[in-house]
Image 1 (cartoon, rainbow, N blue to C red):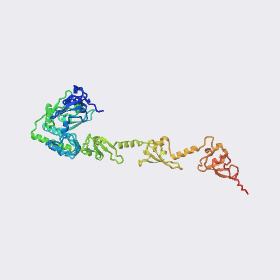
Image 2 (image 1 turned 60 degrees about the horizontal axis):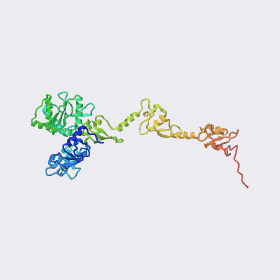
Image 3 (image 1 turned 135 degrees about the vertical axis):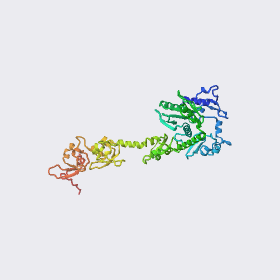
Image 4 (image 1 turned 90 degrees about the vertical axis):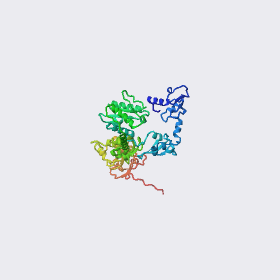
Length: 545
């Protein structure tokens, strides 16, 4: 769903179309005021452009849509047809034609075959060597290089400022910035610091303040400035609606952007306040314009102190400028609000993120991924008496290394750390090395997995109560000397069916018999159990004659 229009925008659209509305073809007799802007009714229109008067049918919704509303087809053809003698861009605006590089919409068309109001997208080259794309009609209507923003200034404002200085004798600052309560940073075109507490003046020409939503923004800014107790005056182009604030004096100039007319409007404001103002001689006006041109050239050349001067590493991490494409940090002041794309310069990171320039140059913000890693590392370091070496020295003695953290020891680890570590089993008969985080070892009291498997196997072969070799065959158990592979086991820990090889000694007095057999072999009931070979020598086999 598109953005809902405000009442002011709806009124502006109806006013624009009312001059061209002829009749409703779908519902005869229905007036424009009685139709919704999204109506699909077919209407008849008459072009209001000078020298045209062409009539054509079109649906109302096509003429009122926010993106690319339809207009007079004849005017569109006239704008885009090949120009006649004296009608081309090269004939009517040679200065702009010199900045033309190529036509992106129709590569075969150039300054000699394009009309100044053509909507062809072209590539341009300004005097400062910047390249950018823009429609020809927008360039003809005053839109300049997207990179030469003048750091918040324009040639028009520079010329008005120097004329006011020359005629009033007062100091004038350009592009004065303030942060009003509840708002982001606001810009005021002119600021006269004397007499105290100073006067702020905003200049509202038609080409920048006649766009949809401009009146609402100007009104909100003016209300915030007055609520903050600032002394503010606005000078608006003739034809623009006044700012709807009760008691606000309405000053007008223009309707064009002649700097002398607008400076004279500022003079009316100053004279009304009792300040001095004099008419400038032609030579003084020329000198003022020369000074204004120099001021503009300094603004275009970039700030005296750039963001790179304040934070040199930004030049290496800069990728792109989304607000003013093509503009780099060395041509932006540290407090610039342009949104840029950055790439972390650390080889093992390379993370990309968007951030406003001043947050990086002035606030010192950097890569969020690296920041999270630093915070995580700081939070994982133990305080005094909290390390693994101090809390659990027995387990700390088994630590070999912290994987991925060269030089870390048990004093750098928390007992519940999730960092993978390499451990060595302290059992003399084992010495197995294995990876595990301290948290797993501390929380579950786990240790060497090989010893754990050995204990599990041993538990499976251990007899249940009353079912050991000692319980079931006490006579056989009395002859057990040792379990050969596991000398620590006793008859109480062996099953009668165990296959562990044991060493036995005959229980008859005076018998020196010694032999090897498993408990399973000794406890068999089939008569094949191994007995003392001295007391029970094997029978000799009989051979038939």
